[in-house]
Image 1: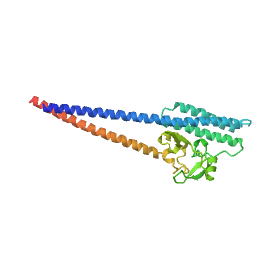
Image 2: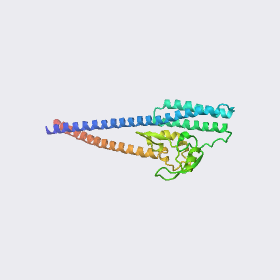
Image 3: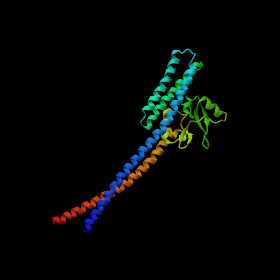
Image 4: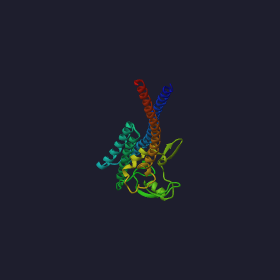
Length: 272
């Protein structure tokens, strides 16, 4: 009788371990899904703000172009800017995963360079160099020069800046920094966390090998540092959960082996 009770106890504990394991796996999957949905919503909101702002820039560009004869080169740049606006809207509508947000901002980055080219042609100036977007706000368009700047409490860095922000920094004034929503407040986008990484990558990832962006405080977010840190934490937690689950599973398997042994013992007794 004692052996039967012990066998039933082992079976109950083993079943409980299996249920715990399945529950832990489902809970982790739900948490990951919620995290992805939050990241998608956050980065989509930032990209939507930029698409809207770019549309407003094109409206102002219409006024700049009015009254000027458009040669073929200017028409091509102007059409490229218009196409970038339509493509960015279509790309944003098609986004289903956080990583896809980068395609939207890649399009916007190219469109803003086209706008800068149109303005230069209207003014009879040399075309702007193909450079990274302004670090302080990628919506400012391509940078024109590098400036030394330090965030509050941080080390000084050499970063690309648009003409207006470069002028302000050199004059000792604060640049116009792109902020994003984090909870109830807005913070500089490089403090926005991993949720904004895809959004920023679209603007800057193609410049990852550029000396002017190496070592910049945003580098960790754009080129894997912050992502690896957050990923490492997630993997660590996940690994811990797997380890706990694996431990319980091992116990369950051990109990199962004991149960099998007891069963074999009963079989031998009856055979005897």
